[in-house]
Image 1 (cartoon, rainbow, N blue to C red):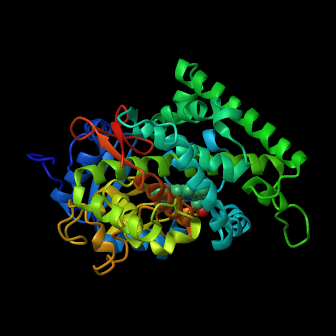
Image 2: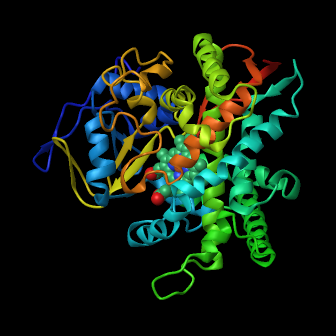
Length: 453
Ligand code: HEM
């Protein structure tokens, strides 16, 4: 909470009031935000209400929105008035021109081409790879072993995207890919700094490391895409992307586009899911009754066998556990949008170029939308009313909503089921410190003891 601050009075900008906010010098606002983004955003919502106005360096105006209805309007109804925030636009350096970073007509074309790859039937076929990855990784555990559950969930998720995107065992065939993606993400937070473009032009060691990592990723993916084409693989996502045709019968995506889509899917698909699973184990440990209810459902529905993809619908509590975990610990903890024209945000005027920030962390923990909001209560997704529109958006919403939502829900549910039926995960120490950078991670991983159930 930010207290004792001089508050800006609502001012008039172009006929509409400017929202209240913390006032103060831009650099002080920015360093406070960088030091503790979650606490700072919580403070804006608590102190200033549904929209808070904050000045950051470089003359940038930021509007932090915690009103669910306005979140929905920005993401869904008025999506065409915005482009993505600076961080994602800059992420092109890592991801190239893929679905996540493209805009406008180019985005629409890509989204239309790729959507079929994420259809119901095709996703269900990936379910076997998800169960297999969970069993493979947990199969290396011994009763009483100390593990880093965050590292282990990253192994599971990387295995799943490796199998489904390339039909490859990335751990044995490309052990460097995890490290290379990690190196790319490690420098990602620098994209947020004002003047980031200038930083990139300086020969800093971190920039050189990043550029080297990016070259490695591209070379690896180009090799894999070419090999997969030659091998005649036809089940994985790369094969499907190669097979896409436009109206005139030509290939819809060229090799470089496929490479960029592949890295986008690898990164977007594994990092988020791995963090979500990690936080879920932590929450289950802190809430033993939920752990018992989960095991009861698994016992009743699966008996002694591992889950299969079509068990998904038979595991509503397991699904609710994952959904509730995404509420309390959303891996993507904020979305930013830049106005491409002057925009009326409720009663307030956002100038062209103004940035709107909507935080899942803040909105999904608001008691106006979720009774007893800090309680981990999977049953709210079974017995309770659905949350109001805009109050729950771990996968965003509208035309830029996560294309992998179904994939992620299936993966989360099947991996939880496969592991929880055989193991108890007992994280050690107190609550982990949260590292809110690229995604929401436990700082330094999440050490845990595994016990055979
Ligand atoms: C729990 C897991 C996941 C979470 C929390 C998550 C969250 C998100 C969010 C919030 C966005 C919107 C970003 C923005 O608008 O700025 C997004 C977009 C995207 N996600 Fe996910 N995601 C998850 C899993 C996946 C998976 C498994 C895949 C692919 C296999 C994937 C692929 C993508 C892609 C390609 C986009 C860009 C879509 C577009 O712009 O049209 N995600 N994701």
